[in-house]
Length: 484
Image (cartoon, rainbow, N blue to C red; front, side, top):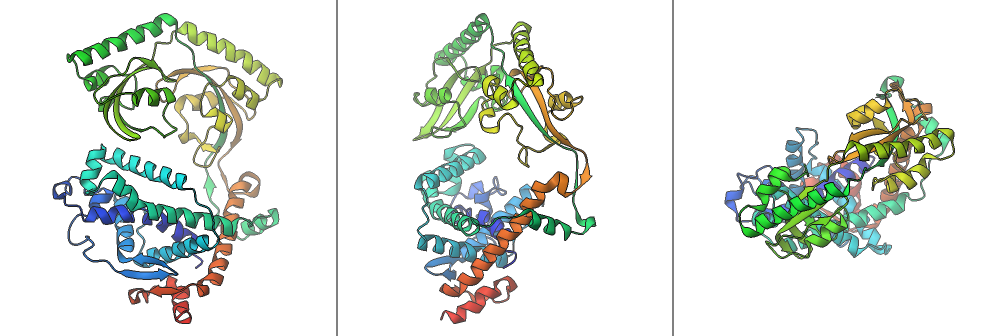
């Protein structure tokens, strides 16, 4: 049971794929197999070697069952992920997945006994997000349904139980570890037990913030962009040009230029600009919207297809040109902000709140977020940002700098270097939070292990004899006899 957390985390994600893999294996679209042999659905449908011919119950925890297909399809999906990630993903054994499945079912069973609330709205949102991911993977809703041999509604229902159980297990685990805390003394004791030659070496790490402001184009240049889009709309509606051709040639959106302006969108997804969603879902199939403005610029949209809250659209974005005049005005404004920052009459947080135009700033306080929270390595930052950090010392602010963001939007920013840690061997002074997090993980794992050791004897258990040779299942196996 000591490996519980790592095994559970690995197989919990794999088990969410089970329903889709199983149903895909019974699809009759044989001609899609060759084209999609590396995709989730096709992996389970590539022939008699991997196809689930018959199913059986191989495990029971209380009133929760585990099917042979659950194990098989989880492993198949791990193999697919390993291929896609060039061997970086470890493929679990059937013993590993069975251990995780038993653990998950036990957590689910206990969460139901404890009446831990699960939001159906949250489950629905997770399902919608999964379907959008599949549609993005296969290119369209129709392609997904053809490959799966099932409608989107049926696919969602296939997933519903596994998604709900995963959420129940997560919430139960949170409850188990909710009172587990770590003290500085425990962190120090944990660290001192690590051999010096086993301590990780860290590259230079920095905490960096930004105040980003967007120059506004002149009204004349805005009108020019609007006029150009109105002309595109007329060409499409007259039949003289195809929307996708114009999008490929003239859109200022690099993310959709190669696909003729195409996106798969969902009305409820918060990532989309509200104006974009509102204008898209007013359209009928084939219809082109009037010109409208979003936070990115000016657009026209063509509705390609729609099913409820999901739609496939094409759009053309025009970003009015920003001249040096507008850019210099913003630089002058931010220069006065920097003066107040350096004099101490304005804090960085206050400046972000008042002057930053970046949407994410309200959630991050203006700090760059990287894989380890707000701590970043140089290779995680854009080149212009790295250049701006060159002469800064911790606590200093750069002069305002003009740059072009990842969306192609001309912008101006002040860069704030909060901290810089030079390359070093891990130590308590520089890396306390990382060390404390690992120590807490271990303490939580011990709490979970203790919980399982106390709970397993109370569950009704059945495990197929095919798993008798799995050493990690010994604790479970020992309690089968007791519960007969």
